[in-house]
Each structure stands twice: as C-alpha cells, then as structure tokens.
Image (tube, rainbow, N blue to C red; front, side, top):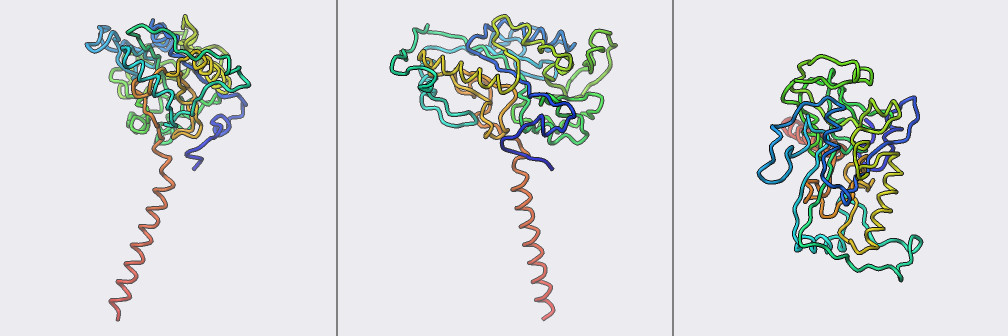
Length: 333
C-alpha cells in the first residue's frame, strides 16, 4: 500500500515511464463573470448529456445546481450583501489553517508594505460571487484509493480519470470523495470518448447507466499537448491551466496583490499540501469562507485514517487473544 496522506508527487507515485510535470487548474473566482462558457465547452467536448431541464433554480439564477456525472464544470451564483462582505473581510484577516495555507500580506521582498495602500476599495451594497467548480484531482484521491475494480487511475499528468468500460457502478468512489464531485450517471444517452480519435470520429449512443463519471481534466487533450476545453473557452482567464507548481505560484501572487489593495477576504483553497488530501490539483482563489461555496473547510481523504484503524484493530485482536488465553488457562486450574 502506498502513501495515504501528506505531501507527495502524484506523477512520480504513478510510476509512468513518461516524465511529465503535474498539471492543474487555478480558478480565480474574483474575475469570474458567471457566463458558464466553461460549462458549455466541457459538455460539448466530452459529449456529456443535458443535466436537468435548463430552467433556473428556485434558489438561484443557476440552472445546473452542482457538479455531477453529466456536469463536470459548474458555475455557482452566490448573492451577498454589504454585511456579509464585511464579515468575509474580517474572517480573511483572522484566517486560520482550515485546509488552506495561512495567508498574510505580501512579504517585504514582494512589495514595500510601508507604502502599500491597504484601504479597502469602495464596494457596492451587493455583489455576486461567481465560482466555477470542478474535480479537485487530489494528491491523495479518495475515489482512486477505494475503487475495487481499477476503473480509476492516475495519469502521467497527476490527474485522476475514470475508465467507464471498467467501472461496475458500485458507487464506492462516490462515498470516498470528500468533495462530493464524482457521481453515477442516471441516464445512458452518451458514451464519453476515451481517446481523441473517438472524439471526432463519432460514436453511437451506448447505455452506461450507473457508471461513475467526473472531470478528466480533458485527458485526451493533454496527451495532444492542448489546453482543457473549459480553460480554453474562459473569456476572462478566470480558469488558468498549466503546471501545478506554476498555478500555485500564480495564485499566491494574485492573493498578495488583492491583499495589498485591501481585499482581505481573498484566500487560497487547495494549495496546502499538508491538508487532509495532500493539496489539490485544482486550486481556487475564494472571496469568502469555503463553506459559502459549498466546499469543505478541512477536506480529508477517508483512507488517511487506515494506518490508525489498522493499529486499533490489531490492538483489539491482541486484547481478545489475551482474554481468550487467560480464560482458557484459568479454566484448566
């Protein structure tokens, strides 16, 4: 059994012959306009079926609601008033490590803090928080760890992909994901392409009801050295794609810039390699606490507890064996 928690390099752990840097997303929610171009591009490229009846939800101007087997990118619409904006700024100032790195103002090497203007900018009485959510492609992926058939695998780019022709629809991965990303498809109208050739050759509708599906980070495009469809379609560059380390560095620079402008509500999510999933391949800049976006504040892969569980089980077995031995020896006297 391999490493189950803590910092590690998932691309090296996968033992591929090809040596590729880990790839990932940086989603900057501060410049997302909620156009849903990423959702459309994702569905079109991956031939994912329609999710719902395209009517607005009663609770939001959103029409898809959440990530799922047929929606691999989802843009949330979160309405906030001035009071909540002020609370977000205060929580940002008092940020503690809850699955996220501790974030402070820019370092003196990056900017002269004595001259920095940290006065919060004028903000309207109301704002939208737009957030394009996606599979996190965790360093320690719960879905991958618990899959009994090997349907999920780690690619040479450090991402996690489902092989729908191997999946038996057991749903173990659904319970193993701390983010609620992966889901079993409820209809079988479309079979997802497994290669770039299939994508353009056309393929008939094949029933795949019950098969687990999620974002592949456009694996077929990665092997062709192309940008994932969602990042390619984003008109504001809110979704950035590249080497994971570069994305984290870009995210930290963006956070420092926003903090220098007084936007203390800005914080990173998924960039802490010491969190419960070893950090994520998809990192996010948030403008409020993760719970506001429907994200767990301290995600933890279920298999991280296995070593402790094994130790406790071993102690229990040893205790039972000792009790049985004492009972047996006591009965002979």
